[in-house]
Image (cartoon, rainbow, N blue to C red; front, top):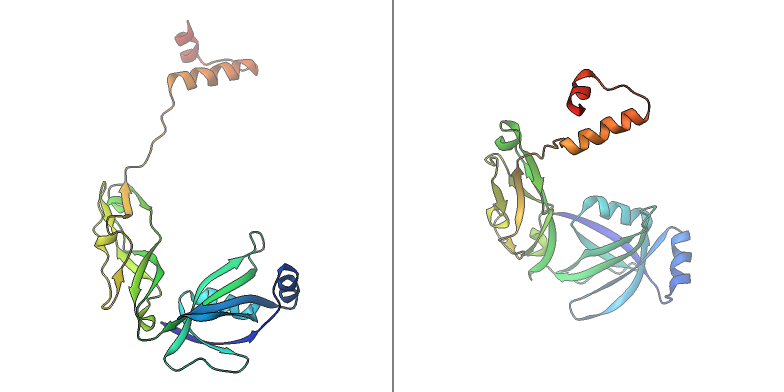
Length: 218
C-alpha cells in the first residue's frame, strides 16, 4: 500500500470558532489516537488532506511539530469529515497502529470483467456492496479488492464469500452478504387504463383520436 509522510502541528485550543479560523487559514483540525495513547489534537494542511483522500488507504508516517513517530508505529486515516455542499475537508482523524499487529479497515470493492448475463442475455448488473471490512497487517492493507464477474449469468448472484483474497487478508464482513447480481431488466408496459387516460388528455386539448381509438371507444 501507499506510504506517505505527513507534517502536522499540535494544537491546544479547541472549539467551533477555533476550527473555523483554522480552516480559513487553509488548515484542517484533526486528532490522532490509538495504541492506548492519549488523544492529541493537531492540524494539517488542507492540500495534504486532499492528497490523502485521493490516495484512499495509505500508511501515514505522521510527524508532529517536527517529531517523527516511534519506530514500528505509523498512522492510518480513520475518517475525514467534509462540508456537505463544497466537499471541502472540515476535520480528519488519524489512528496510531502497530506495524506488527492486525487492524480492521474498510476496503472498496471493484468489479472486473464483463458479465455474460448482461453482454449476451441483456441483463443488468446490480452492485449492492461497495466495500468490505478486512483484517490484516497495516503494511498489507489493499487499496481495493477485485471481484471478477466474467462468469456471472442472468439470475445469478455473487457473495462476499466468492471474493478471491490476497494472502494475509481476512474478511470480517458477513460472507453471506450479496455483492452483485445480474437481473432481468424491468420493462414498463403501458396498461389499458393508462392508454385511456392519455387519449382523454389528448381530447381535452382538442386533438381528434385516430380511427382505431374511435372504434375502441364506440
